[in-house]
Length: 455
Image (cartoon, rainbow, N blue to C red; front, side, top):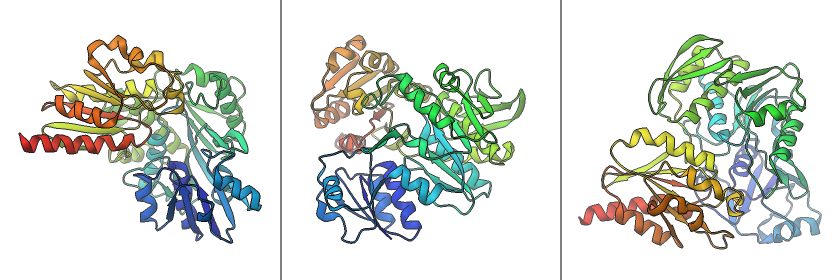
C-alpha cells in the first residue's frame, strides 16, 4: 500500500509514518516546516519528505492520504485530495484501524507530561521484556525511535486532546479505546480549539466512556479538573497517585533526582535517575501504576526507571561552552515553564538561571496566558523573550512585573547576541519553545564557544 502523509513532520504524524513503514507500506509525505528531531528520524527511516504543499508531491496511485490536524480547507494539497476524490483519513483514525485494533492500549493523556510519561511506560515495559509497541509525541532516548509496532499486544500511545482533523473535530484520543488510561493532569490549553476548561473536560469524559470496566484509570489525587471530568461518569477502577493517593513519591534530593516510592503506605524502593523536578516525580508515579496494570512488578519497574534516559527537548543539555550550560526544552505553558525552572534551580548552584522564551503556541499567541507569564518566569535570574511576528498582545507589558530582569527582542539574532554577551561561567541557560525557536539553543552554544575562543 502506498501511504502519503500531509503534515508528516509533526511529532504524531512522523510517528505514524514510521509505523506505516514498519507495516511494509511505501511511505512519503510533505510538510511546511522540516526540522530536527523529527526530520532526522524520518531520514533514518528512509522516508521521503517534500517541503511545502505542492499537490505534485502526492504520488500517483496513492492508496491512502493521511491528513494532519494542522491542515485545513484552502491548503493546496487538501484541495487536491478533495477535488480528485483521493482516499483520505485522519492520523488518529488510521492509527486506530491499522495498529491499535485488538491490542492492549495504554494511553497517556493530560495537559502536561504526556510525552515523558508515554516514553517512561514504553521504556519500563521494554526493559521488562514485554516488547511493546509505542507512539511517543517526541524523540525518546533509548527506545531507538519515536514509534515502534512492537511484538506483543501492548501498545503505549501519547493521547493528545487536540482535534483530529479539519473534517473530524473530536479530540484525537477518543479514537484509541485504551484498556489502561493515564490522566496526568488537566488545565486549560488549546484555546484555538476549546473555549474553556469545561470543553476539554467533556472530551476527557468521552475518552473515559471508552475504557472498559476491566481496565484501569490512573489519575492524580489532587487535581480538581481531572476529578471534575471523572465526576461526569466513570465505569472503570481509578488508581490515584501523588499526595493522598495510593502511589506516592518522597524526594530524597532537592532536585528530585532521587526519590522513594510508596504503594498504599508500603515502601517499594528508591530510584536515582538522570531526570529532575517534582513534575517528573508525578510522571514517574503514573508510569509505575500503568506498568503494574500491564503486569510489570513494581520492583522491576523501579529498576527500569533508574536507567530511563529521558526525551529530547525535555531539559535536554545541548552542550557547554565558556562555562555556560545550554538546555533545550519544550515548555510553552506557564505551568510547564515554572516546572522547568524549578527543576533546574537546585542544579544551578551559585550560577545564574537564564530563561529564553518563544511564546509560540496558539494559546500563547492568543494571549490567554499572558497574565500568568511573569509569575511562571519568576524563578529565573534573567529572562530573554522573543516577540514573534504578529503577536496580538504586549509582551513587554506582560513581563513588566519582572522589572529589569526581563528583556524582549524582535529577532532571534538579537536575542542570541544579548544572551551570549552577558553570559558568564556558571550560568545555566534554558531555551523554551514548542517549535524550532529558529535554532536558538545551538546558535547560542556556537556564539558562546566563539566568545570563549576569542577571549
